[in-house]
Image (cartoon, rainbow, N blue to C red; front, side, top):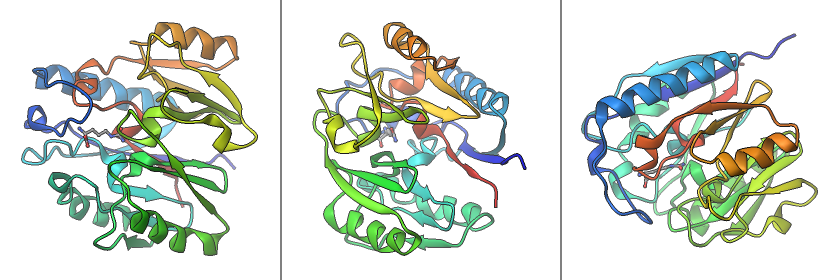
Length: 258
Ligand code: CIR
C-alpha cells in the first residue's frame, strides 16, 4: 500500500523581518515575495505526493514559518521541543494540538533545549547536533523518549552553522549531502557522502520527499554533484527565507500518515 506523507507547514509571519539571526547580517525581507516562495514550496511538497496541511501565519512570532524546529515526529510519537531561542518558545503551543491529531505527543521539559533543525533521522538512527540551540539535557530527553522504540540517539558536534541540518541532510536513501567544514561525516557511519561545492556553504540542506529532493535553486554547483549521483531534484526558490537563516527542511514537518 502506498504510504501517504503528511507535510505540515505554516504561513510566513508578517513579522519575519524581526527573526532570530545567528550567522547572517540582517537584510530586508520582502514578506509578499517570501509568501509567494513559500506557496511554491508547498506546491513542490504536493507534487512530491505530500498531503500538505498549511497552518495560518502567526504575525507576532517572526520565525514561526520554520515549523521543523518545534517538533520531531517519529512514526510512533511526536516530541514537542523547547527551542533554544527564547523568542521561539511560544511557537510550541501552536504546533502541539496540530500534531496531537496525528501522534501521541510528549514535551521536552525545561531547562533542556532542543531545536528540530538539529535532529537528523536516518532510519532507526537519530543524530542530534550539539549546537547553540540544543543542549545535553534536551538531547538526553529525546534519547529517553526514542530508545524504547528502538532508535539510537547520537550526539554530533557542529560548528560554524546554526543547526546540524545546516551542515548535513539525507539527499536520497543511503546518501547524505554534507558541508565538511561544519560537521564530520565520519560520525554518520555507512552512508554515501556528497560534499557541497565549497563556494556554496549553505548547500547541505535538502528535503527528501516522494523519491526526489526539494532543493534551493541558489546552489547550482552542488546541484550538479547531486544529479551526477542520480538524485532527482525538485527546485525551489527560497531566497527570502534564506535571509531569515532558513532553508528547505525547516519549513515543514514531513511524516507518514498513521
Ligand atoms: C532561527 O534562527 O531560529 C530562524 N531565524 C531560522 C531557523 C531555521 N531553522 C532550521 O533551519 N531548522
